[in-house]
Every structure is written in C-alpha cells, then in structure tokens.
Length: 489
Length: 150
Image (cartoon, each protein chain N blue to C red):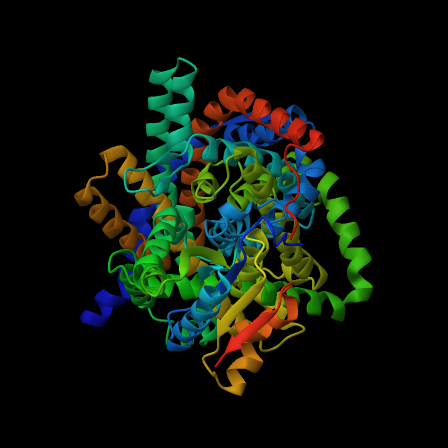
C-alpha cells in the first residue's frame, strides 16, 4: 500500500501544480496575433526595451565594453576603496546567480522548440540585453539604501520607490515597487528554484540509470528534492554560510570547465562548424518545421535568452548594488558584461554543441538530457561530470534567488522576521515541487513568474532612464577631461 | 628623494600579530629612537579584489571592513604603538586592506619612508613555494631598503 502511495506522490504534485501553472501562464503570456502567430506581449515588451536602451544610450553595450573590462580589472579603483566590494566581486556574485540551468537546459529547450535558428535570436537578445542590464544596474546603485547597521540594500524595489518619488511620482513608485517585490518572490520560486531542481534531478536520474536506476521510482523526485532542500535550508535558514562560500568559489571554475568541454566537443567536430553556423543563420530567418516561422523562432530565442541572462527583469540589480563606487554608472558598465558572458558566450557554446553534434534531431529527449547527449557523443564520461556541475549550478542559483526573494519579502513586510521564515519555508517546498514535477509544467510557471517581474521593473526603468543618461554623460565628460583617470598600479 | 634637512625620517614596520612581528617592531623602535625617526607601525588586512564572495558577504562588506580595521587596531597595532611610545619612540599606527607586500610598499612610498622592516614567521618551504611570503615579496618589489628581523 505504501509503495503504491509513494509511487503516486510525484504524479499528484505534478497534476495539482499544472492546474495552477496553466492559469497563471494564460494571464502573463497574453498574446496577440502577429503575422498569424500568437505573439506574447511580454516577450515583445522585453525585446523592445532592450532595443530602446541600446539606441538611447548610443550602443553602450558595444562602445562601453572596453571600459567595463578596465573597471573589472580595478584600473580605476582608488586606494581608499580597497577592501570594499570591488567591481569584479559584484560581477562575479551576480554571474554566479545568473549562470545556471538556463544556460544548459534552457538552451536545449530553445533548440527543441525553435530549431538551430533560435540560437541566433538568443545571441541578438543577449547583445541587446546588455543595454537593459546597464540601465537597471546603474539605477540599482544610484538609489540603493544604506541601512542603519552600515550594510547596503539595492535593486528595483529601491529605485522604483525612491527614484520615482524624486520625480514626484511617489505613489506610482510605491505601487510598482510592491508589484515587483511580489513577482520577484514568485519568480524566485519558479525559474530561480523549481526549474533548477527539476533539471538537476533530471540529469541525476539519467546518469544513475534512468527509469530503472535508483532514482527511477515514482517518489524519487520528492526524495531528491528533499535532500537538495535540506542543503539549501542549512544555508538559508541554518545560516551555515561556509557552504555558500565554497559553492560560490566553485561556480566560476565549473563555468570554465563547462565551456572548455564545449570547446573540446566543437574541436572534435571542427569540420562541421561552418555547417552549424549555416543552420543557425538559415534557421533564424527561414526556419523549417517551427510553429510560427520566423516570428515563432524569434519568440523562443528572446524568451530563453531573457530566462538565462535576466536582463530587464531587475533581479541582477539587487546583486550589483553592493559595489563600492561613488559613480553608479560604473557598475552599469560592469553589469553589461553579464549578458555577454551568460548568453553570448556560455549559451552560444551550449547551442553550438547541440547543433554540431546533431543531438537536437533526437525525438523525445528534452532539456538538460539533450545537452548531455550532445556531449556524450564526444566525451562519454561527460554526463556524470555534467550531473555534478548541474547540481552545483542549480544550488548556487537557488541560493542567489532565495536572497532576492528574501529581500523582496523584507521590503513588503517591513523586514518582518516571521515573514522571512515563512518565505524561506515556502522556498524549500518549491525545491521539492520542482524536482517532482515535469519539465513543461515547471518551465511554464517559471517563465510566467520571471517575465512578470519585467512589467513593473521596465515601466520604472523607462521613467528613470533620463537619470541614467545624465549620470552617463557626466561620467563620460569626466573621463574625457581626466577628472577620472586610471589609478597607477 | 627624502630631504633630510626639512623632513623628519620615517621608518615603516609591517606587523601581523605574530611574535616575529612584535620583535621586528621593537627592533625598529630602538633604531628609530636612536636616529630620531618616526616609526609607522603598519598592519595590512589581506584582501584581494578578485576573491569571490557571497551576496550576503557583499552586502555586509562595509560593516565587515570597518570591524576588521577596528579589531586590527585594538588587538595588534595600538598596543604596540603604546608600548613603543612608552619606550620613548615616536610611533604611530596604520591599518590598511590589500596585498600585504604591495600595500606595505605603498605606505612606505606615501610616507617617504627611508626604511622598511618586517619580521618573519619561519614558515615551511612548501608553504612559501605555494603562497610566497611577505618578506620574500617585499624584497622583490620594495623601493627602499628592507630589513627582515628573525
């Protein structure tokens, strides 16, 4: 009897969660017909914003690249700033939170739905998204709050409420900040959490023998979820920061390891690289067998890029705002590197690996397993290493998002301790729900929640972009005139 | 170039809380007193801008840095400065964050010091091979004479 019950746990969770998820998706992904294709307005919203910021800041994503690298290297760090959070550290922390299953499994989802051409639109969205990230992270630093104890808090909640109040729109600012905080909490449960544990479990299950292996049973998702939740709980409730520190130190190495493995696979198939690029370009403009043709593939690409690099969602501004600088725009520069690293480099690597090995034509393989299969064709041991990397990426992304969610909860409840504990308990429950549910249900919910964040965030960013422009113009003038110059090493 | 006629001589000693650092400070103190020089007792909190931290560490960094400086003053630098002053040495303390050897050199340059002193803790060869040592680094990069006190 108990085995029958246990066998059904994953299924029951999945079914109930699916009902809720579908209802939410209908609202957020409200679509209009464009050229006969259902176009979700929220995707257009993000894409248009990235284009607007790129034009408004005269291509800061490209012309600011070199200066961003100089800032990260510490070329402009004054001696009195040493010992505070450096640009490199703020970027590294934000990247640790951003690089996750979106880069590995999300790309596979994009190629399954949109074909190789989705890669092209992901890269375009990544390049344009750099301008969105520049804008929101500059605001994050500009309107951050120094707390009574000397620590700093920043992010959309603060620039929406404080920034708009400065423009005489305090009421609107409060509403937008509260809406953002609510969506941020929900987003932290979806893409930042459930999706991560879902795909970590999928990969662990597949390397341990799939359906016939030890993780093949009907309750194994729950069990895996509980174990992962225990680790997350030890850090976020138990306060064992050491685990978080070790993880954050490992993530950059894992990312380098992952990209190296991609390069090995690409190297082994070097002669097929031109054909892969042809497929990506051809597929971007005249896709075959993709629902909705060019518009369809564009939607998929833009959606998965935003899911991975979070540009326009506002989440990264929370992590970036801890930096030590008296010129907020410097962190904007540094932040624009994030979508570049995340999407233009890492996601493209995953995509090329999947396209070049032809793994995407296999029917019935989805998400992380597709990526894993692509690697396996060249590196037979890779699925095991990927399982390890995936769990680590999932874990670090979950820790980062639990922090974002906790900050949003604190903002809404005036730093209530009880609310904080409740939020964290719910967060842990979603670690389990994610592992127990199926990918399509989880990704639908995760997308909806994450994209919802962009609605209040970008309204505010549009209203505040003049402030960023002023900061940028002043800063550029100071660079030109030498008021700001490199600090001699 | 230090103008000996107008500016009093300054000597910098790097300390790290160890017995060796203390010995170096007292050794430096004797020489400073004899030569009428000012002794700067410097402690560098090891810090790299490339060390990866968690978000929460970042958020609390201003508080943590403040605390690290305060503690270094209270437990290491200030007691030494007091003891040296009691011995009649013109001593002052400074705490900075950064790479120990590089920061000691920076301090020496800023103060136009004529001399840098450090203790050595006698770490194992393996450790020195892996991580280097502050006296070792100093000798390579210092622009003023360095004395290592055993």
